[in-house]
Image 1 (tube, rainbow, N blue to C red):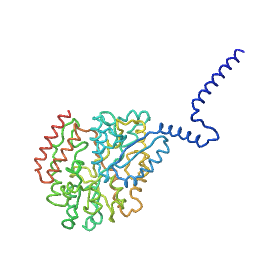
Image 2 (cartoon, one colour):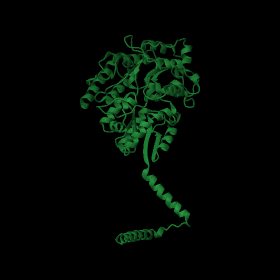
Image 3 (cartoon, helix red, strand yellow):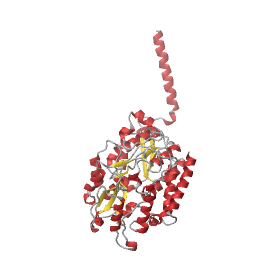
Image 4 (cartoon, rainbow, N blue to C red):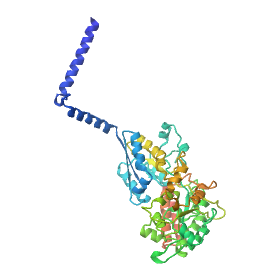
Length: 466
């Protein structure tokens, strides 16, 4: 009887509780005869649950809509969201014309303002180092440890900063020379040998000039990045040319003086290269200059190869052939260039409210994500290289000299010159280096004065950084 009494008491408690619950909901009573109301309540509950579950990952690209579509980023994101319910990915271009400098400026403003931006892209190891030291980036080592992987085993170009990894390499590319084959043939020139030098490059550039005034076609175009003010440093100085491993400035190396003189002579003596004043005043973009036929040759990273097939954006009919990055002199190994992308790439914003999900998406974006379009030279070690080169060439292989491309990129003796360290205040030092070269190239100061200013201003930056 005692057991039955206990059961009865329990039953009464349940009945009273149920009665209270039903009376409390009396104002929104739902019956089987009111299916519309019942369905709306179910939908409301479902919506509340979805809002609670959804995580928004927001990031921006330095590439435009056409390039993002070509790389099949939208398809990849759609597939990722299906495989990861409750995660929403919001990706958008940040600049209209594929301008990384503008992208970087806007990202810095957004980060400073506290706007949501979960993934951040950097173009150089020095840039990653500066952001890491400013506490902008999240170290990725603990996330990789939870995943039980080694980022070094997964990707090429992973470079720690003060013992921690802050960026996952998106693509690792060599530099090479893009040549308009129609112009090469018209000048009666053979494809350059793998061991050609910058002296040879100068001869080629001079022989491919044509036209006058606004219709002039130059033999060469070099962009406004630091690598192009002293082109010999890539093959002459291994590792970081701007700093020694113990943090001392490297501008006393004679290759800087000689290299700066070399570019000046191309533009102001031979007049075979697009002058810097035009680049600055007209805000020229290297893709447009080359594909519009304004220059016969341009030196660029292999990432530009995929743009050759974008005829809607860069209409042209000529075939592009390729040559190795020239060596400075006979003491340098042929086909030596910087391995662009080493140490940099995509990072997680330290202020992201969804770091775990941001890291997870970052890993997918830089691995399977790049396999969707095969339009980048992926640093992921499991990538399908054959599929990449086939995809990059596109349906119309007549636009490419594929054999020349393979000879340069898959040369077994190719030397990839990578940074393994950065110097104190390196980002600011490079800004100074560019600024003083700009004044020099536009005849605003002598070579001696430019070098003097570079050294003095850089020494002040290093002293403050230390």
